[in-house]
Length: 202
Image (cartoon, rainbow, N blue to C red):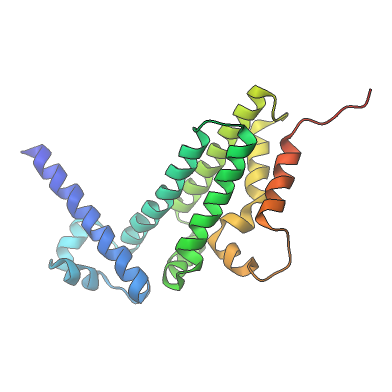
């Protein structure tokens, strides 16, 4: 009985997040109320508050789901076959593409992410840290095969993430789209060159 109840509660939480994301996309985060979400689900606002203690926590849940999809894809690429440099390029390109499609092309979702970044939610910090760790995994694999030569793995992963920030961060992707600067491929070339072994003169 408890197991069924737990499944039911999980399903209800998921339904709330699905409806909330749809409303955030349609009318925007600021304009969406918990009452709107409850009405769509044909339940009372009080029932929604049983699962999420505030609108902000619903927002965090939606953001967590969207960021989680990016993390899953990044991990899949990191753990696939092939040279580390190829996988690193594919991962960085994929993160940029997914964030561009989700947030930059969708003004309402962009608004949601902007608020999340401004409030520095833990979910955003955790996401950025995990992406850094996944990039670090690939760099470590490249070190093991001799593709990369790095003295400080943690610093190398941090530098790689920082170099890619204008291509990873939803706000920066939007702001830098029409500004001069390297293309994503040029920036990835630069990062990979920085990780690659130096040729030593005899």
